Image 1 (cartoon, rainbow, N blue to C red):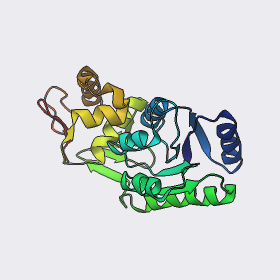
Image 2: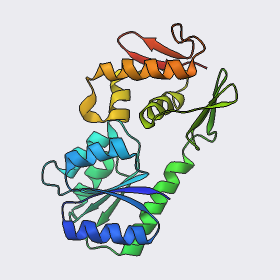
Image 3: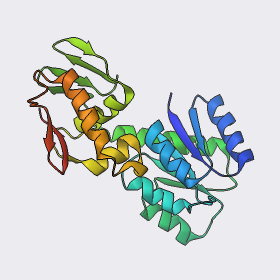
Image 4: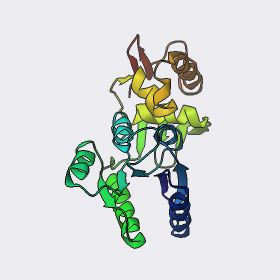
Length: 225
């Protein structure tokens, strides 16, 4: 089941979209304003975002730019704005598709499915990352060490998953905080120290001298193979 984040401040339309999407097998999360949308995208990890541009607190283009600052989630813009320049701006900011109101539900469903399919087709072909004695299964969200399952909390998993998808590359503190906790947590570096320590206790042979989850002081973290 794919998860869609519906961002629209019209209660009747948001409710109708949610009912129709659930009837077609989607898991639905809703947000009625831009800030709630950014928070929901960070915490709910949707497979696609359906974004209205006319929001009460932030313009939809600001939300779009905010999401693209830290996420590659597919974004389908849903808007009553039919001017060509509005569509061009949204696409330039990183939208994957643009649907104008009024719309046919079957067309919208097809566009959402296509956005999710393109995103998955562009994902890495391997879903299992091997790091020393660790096997990190990205598809099944499981970790094993020396053949034994390791139980992680959802936040620990999100932290590890981000590092695993960037194996051998430095991931900055700001990027980790945005993607795991949300865009309002960029300066909460104490979270990183706590969760890095927890992961090392579960994953490293010698947590005091880690060889896989490596800190670059003042910069971020790297998962070394």
